[in-house]
Amino acid sequence: MIEVTVAHLGLDRTTNTPVVILREKEGSRVLPIWIGPAEASAIAMELQGMKAQRPLTHDLLKQILVGLGGDLRRVVISAVKENTYFAELLIRREDHVFQVDARPSDSIALALRMRAPIFTSDQLLDQSGVETDEPSPNPSLEADKLKDYLEKMDPQDFGKFNP
Image (cartoon, rainbow, N blue to C red):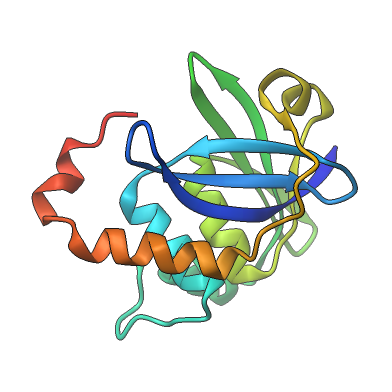
């Protein structure tokens, strides 16, 4: 497994869709994953250290996991099928490890909140990743652009998202 970090969060200029870019920690490959506006907002808020007045879904899930004695050990971006990415949460509670199917965007938002590592396979990076020599941009600067975009959206736009 290859550890990745959130390197960039922004908008795909061709589709005007939020995209999160994961970069391998010890390499130059990146993995772009197109996500929904709500999840992009949740990721951007955490990258900027912002907290909502009331708990968002990912904050709630974190509190439930911690309250039940669980620990998010890692997130694994496991596969892509027909342009849909899949992820798994590996949760430890006492001496049991649970594997939970989840969307990558939700998994990333939760991993950031719980300071859990994010992994993917070498094969997935070869299959869907992109080699880059660019230095990793500051994700909080890109998060500002995304925040501006999300603030200007009409709430009805959230129902129109088709990845």
